[in-house]
Length: 389
Image (cartoon, rainbow, N blue to C red; front, side):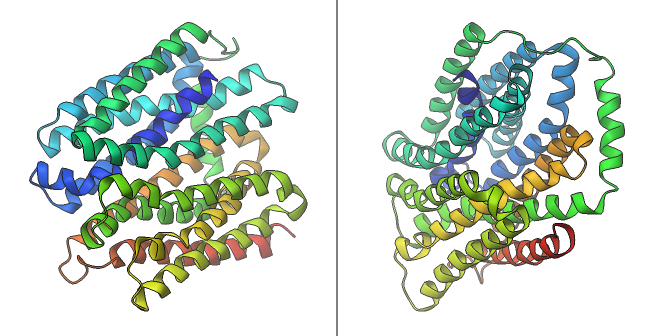
């Protein structure tokens, strides 16, 4: 349970405040591109943090690195709540991301430390469930807090949550690191990562993972502008319109866990990519036909969520299975590419919303989703036909 709690901080910090993005733009006297950077820098810091947290915990121990990260998350959340300029807010988001990344990265390492192969998969499943549930409720809670108390309330909530999780981890979590070769872990990781990057098969799976992530983060960063600024939805209502995609993602993960082994990695990726694009194109079609209700735009995204639930876990499984002896390095590099793709998508969305020709339409959200989804579909078919027969 403590690992579920620390794993939830990262998705909460991404999703809870997104209903406040348009209001933050006004309050801080900035533009959409700069506000989108609060997501972009968070994702970049998370990508970098995922790479370095593992070696740090191998060297100094899981418990001190995790507790230090949680304390940094609390300090970053406080700084976000007190920020009066966009520059200060961006710096605070970097601190918050690096802190949350400790929980994201080390929870899986602790599972590996404390579980045999027969139980590790089930426990990691609980962690993924916690991370999937957080985006269901975080935007709704954040929207209600924004409507009642303003945009800073979400960061105050994150501060309180971080304090509770830090206290829980301090009391409940002991040291789990195996006492073997810790000092040389970073050199080993560096060498194995270099060899991994030369494997073409790894890039196919990791590239599919990265491209799919651009769709998710383009939706997360673009949806508040579409719903609140274009469709007139209140921040309190907005969070509920994101639920179809996240609920679809949870269902897709369940189907993957139940039937994925019998269907096969390549086939699951291809089916998932088709469903992902199907949901997106239904939404675009309804928009072009003049249906401007939020349900018309976000309701079909349940198919996109199901598709992601099929594709993402299998792309991750493919990436870490290319060379089993490099699974640790593959997990870190693939995770960094996944979050890095999301960072690029948020930056593109912000730029497009600041373009006069597109500012009053959903196209700044749709365009990166189309590009990412079509590219992932092509790469996924290639993985299926060339690598998994």
